[in-house]
Length: 322
Image (cartoon, rainbow, N blue to C red; front, top):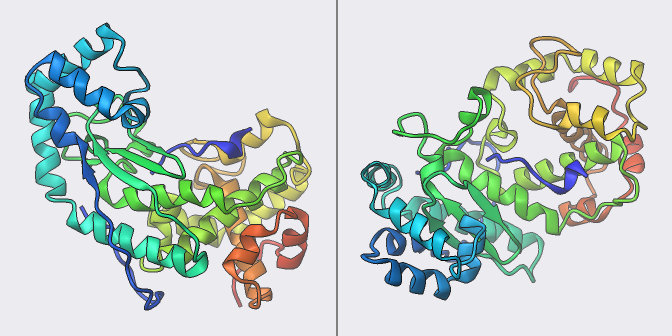
């Protein structure tokens, strides 16, 4: 089911203004596995490093260090001139990662304010030669830094241009938070409808907004400012399209993925309608729901798996804010 997997995407986070809290930051240290990896001098040294960091190896490369051909391939990558140049850009772009650590510390502090029992995941910086970009579990986050250097990178992930712009430093923390929101986002997976998907993504984005109060909404969802404006200004047309096509109760994966999956734009609605518009629409509905029910906390929202009740409670009909 589409909602079970976020498509990424996703040196400091760009800060906006107007939202925030005084939550104390919890110290975060990002482990520099990338440095250890790129400092190896032999295949034997590499194999030892990978065996000592099997969980990181699994997420970063999706392979086992016991595979001799795999370790040989990775060692070749670490010694290749082009990979060394790209890794040099990692250092130029991200430095000592202190800014990113502070951004994660602030976000984890916000989560702990909402969920006092929250245990932050271990965060590891990696380098995969563009084999991977990011992998997130409840306990471990592995970030392949070279994938997020941005437009100045010598080599970039093999992605279409409309997605490639999100492979930049400012998207790293928002992407991780969206992944981590899954553990709090109670969802009735037996009801795999368009509405259920909408509310799932809407709750995820609203959680991200609460946890990253100084990050622009456009970064949370991965839209340009123009795409954000187009969605907001034409939401009446978008909503009318959903109603006319009777999409709310659709359980057809092939239909639903067109509205929630990666696309440069939604041709069914119009050339100026951004892709993944179902995610944005879900966010708008959840936002309206919270406006109508200010007594509902983020944990209560995330615990509510009744997508239809949230839709009804939002009273959303494609309208803009008054």
